[in-house]
Image 1 (spheres, rainbow, N blue to C red):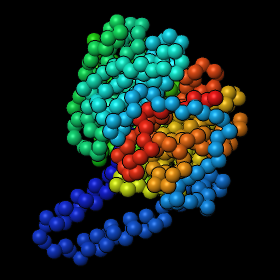
Image 2: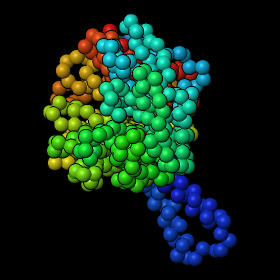
Image 3: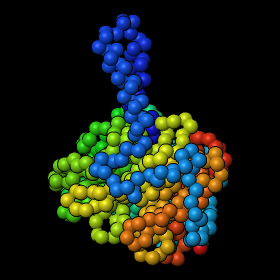
Image 4: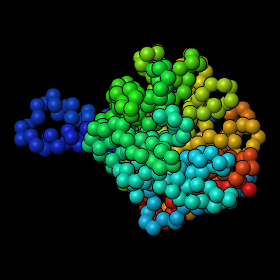
Amino acid sequence: MAKKNKARRNRAKQLAGAETASQERPAPGNSVLLGLAVVIPIATWLVHPWVLPQGSLPEEHRPPTAWKGAEGDQFSKSPLGFKQQPIGPAPKHLPQISNVQILDFDEDGLQDVIACDPQTNRVLWYRQGPVGTWEEQVLGEDLLAPAHATVADVDQDGDRDVVVSILGNIFPDDSVIGQVVLLENVDGQFKRHLLLNDVRRVADVQVGDLDGDGDLDMAVAVFGYSRGQVLWLENHGEFRYEPHELFYAAGTIHVPLEDYDGDGDLDIATVVSQEQEEVLAFENLGSGKFRKRSLFSTINYDIGSAGLVKTDLDRDGDFDFLLPVGDNFEDLTSVPLPYHGCFWLENRGDWDFAAQRIATFNGTYAASAGDLDADGDTDVVLVSMFNAFETEGNASVVWLENDGQQQFRTWQVADRPIHLITVACGDLDGDGREDIVAGGFNVQYPTERLGRITAWIGK
């Protein structure tokens, strides 16, 4: 969510500034190049909304010709009933929640909610009491623009610690202001350790044994702005970590870890969203060595990759990805675009991931997988940041109902709150059906129909 002016727009501005500073008349050849630099982007802009990802997709996965554009998306009302409930206090200002997740943090049998709040620079735990009541506890504060909190027993002492990805600035910034901070659980109190400093904005950290030595290492997505990285942090004990660069590129968002090739070790995946729009994997070769693989790419550099979610969508025993696309943060007034929605990257083995569009939905910014109707299939929930919310009734939350064959029907769950940037699925009320929690991030018009953290409980 660390978004996002396109790096190519930065380069254009830098070129324009350099030209203004120069008092010399450009050579004729330079004039031709300058002309092409103007003509080609304009031509691409006119064409690219309908350009498909590399490796042509079937006709049924293309955006429909009846796409409504700036009118926004409305869908049939979900046949599942949901009770909408705020979690935590009502927003005093325009809320900015960067991440929510559902888990039983204190292992008392009730699902809780962990949230990152860059407006107050805190990581919060909403502990569920008697079902439907929530107690706010602060896990960490004075964390400058936290993007994500990862819960794991980092020091392997039997309790749950929290690793926080620090942006340093919620808005575009290429300064060296990112950090990785560990909140070590010490008898229910959380002691702060700085694990990584002097990097650009950090959007995600995930924890796992990456070199096979028995302790827990970390993978880090350094989003930055026009410069970024994918790192893995080698654990040397005593909260000391050595960074190793795997990839240098701006705009890496998430780094989900899993054994994607089934060979018994953890691989790293990421989505790059600035200079290019691409899903990459780093195949674990053992002993801290990795091989880069490209899993998905597109020549539409404005498609707006907004995250990467691992899930076994077809329940065949391996892990696929959900790729929500619809980030429009580069524009002050964002409009829906016809290629917004969500792709399923199906894992077909041997590092072959087949892209299939499963939804077209304006301004899609986050996805989560869960069985909402308890029929044994994995459904998908999407939330929108940019669905032409000037018009009331346009969807902010949709449910993609899986028919068991990975064909999806889109149902509207809610049209408010609007400007949602993060979503999670989990069974909050213990009825066997997964529920929804989403977070609002309000920096654009309209500044109404707002919500900070909201749950939709299946009835």
